[in-house]
Image (cartoon, rainbow, N blue to C red; front, side):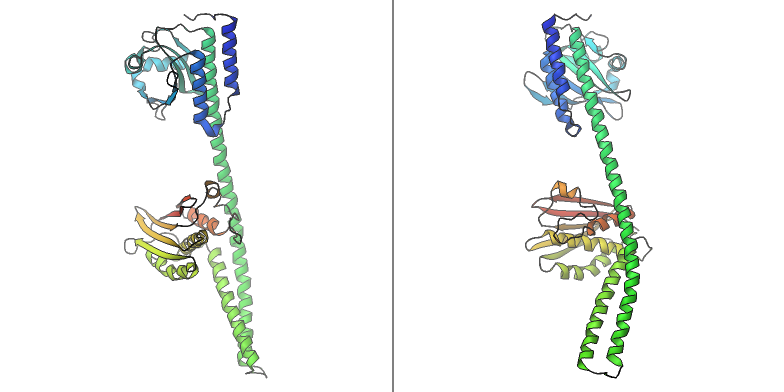
Length: 413
């Protein structure tokens, strides 16, 4: 039996409370805070000892108290678990009713299953429970628990309990929508980034081809100046020849870099990961010597190779080391580690530099994003593209003032 409302004052109190519920700031990124606010308001409005929000586990085998509020102590808790097999009639009632108004919860058919495992240990005598549905499916329940002499619930109290459940359903739905939108945004950003890198690869191939022809022409002119012509042997011609040859060597180096960048999608040779790191070490030490020292910690089985081409592994390690160098503002250390982990080979590049904020970490893979005065935002984007193409994984652990560690997992050959 449900009691009618006590009068105008009672109805006004519940309408005021429902208005407060409607005004709660529903921020899907702060799900827990919104739930706690709703539970606290429900407990004080209904004058019950405790209000809990219980959710069905992914397996559907348990009811888990995600959050609870206790009015007498003003405490927030959670974590209690009930096995669904213990409370079949209670679950059936949740599926069938808008609100369960159990005036005597120990004997009410809908809640009697809860007596031994939950109600009696906590001294709960009456319950007002509102199920929470999402996309037509039961996902949880808001439990208002009264301690003391059994209590008869009024119509306004039933309506209010339903309003609390509706608010929590809205919080969860908006949270799911926000997460889905963020995942879609990240996927679209990744696709855009890969397309941009693809365009750069095509540009690299084209420039490398044309630049190679220019370098060849410079080499031919340098040879003519050094070995032929009516003014052969003049000192100025010899100096010009040396300069041209130096330019040719520099140009050849640039062509090599462009070709390596443009060859990401091509099949290339492999070699043991330890050999790749050892071969890169002198180059890295030369490039970082003004700001940092290099330490190697290689723990790999003999001959362990990754499926990734040598040039691509070199790009990954070199770019991560140069990124670490740029993060160090005082004499520091860069550590390159390599190890085997099942069917993966793992490369770690750590530094004791300035570290990054969470906001910067969230954007470091974006092509052209950089925090360096003279950076171009290509290095880390290239690393991410290589790892993704290889079906690998890369993680970042960075904190301001505590340095950064990049961990790369590559498939093992």
